[in-house]
Length: 362
Image (cartoon, rainbow, N blue to C red; front, side):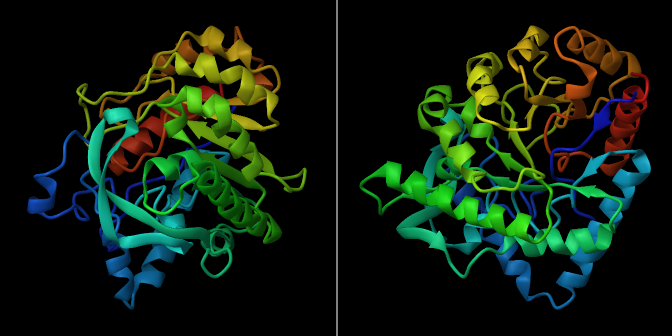
């Protein structure tokens, strides 16, 4: 029986969709602001995508882009698709726009991702709560209506640790309470998604690979709490990767140690998540790691997302064959390492085509 396939989240935006994002330079800080920043990955101005909201044609262009990207994934044979995160400027920023207490306009400087880069980020200036109730369901519902009933559509949103790494706290004396309030916001969004019919929800928590001690101390428990109250028929997915720069084909970006997967795996497996998404095409893990997941299905990254080189069938087949020594085929799902927003569409299509063809061989 063929292996199942999915994607992690983002796709590149088409030219007609005027939303600046992290993957392009359209939404970057000014030259003066950039001159005070360090590293690769911190050039995106989180205010830029909101400035595009005045475009009267924006909603129709989002719908067109979402429909196109869903149809392309289905045509390639992807089993669980996303809307390409077409509405978003960055995967972890969109939800912040709906959290009261986060100042999205007056930014503060912060060193992020365990020192990988510095940038300007939103600031917490008051108690955190959803500003007007959940809104993520609207993004999912738009895509679901366009996809139709025969497509399995996954919704992605950032986790509390990743959001915390992307803000400066100027309000809370007790950071545990800040984390608890972030969890409450994410949980409310997730419950509303499920209430509207979403059956496949993924929380992105790459920051856990940067700070495994914090993840083990409180992060993973908070992540499980984000899913609290979900019906049994909703698939709960978490995604952890080692981090990526905002440039293709570079080895200069300091990634999180891939061995942190081994540190986190036992606890991940104990918390009731249905699936965990990890990178492997870039990381080239010791795949005995997969034996640490006794019940959790593994979404294994088998094509790179920051390399223009297209994997061969042999490349992917060899990694899958090795993986199946440590996990059964019914618990292995193939995917890219992370979001695909940095790559040209022509390369994305080739990578996904080869990935899905190999999935059919097992």
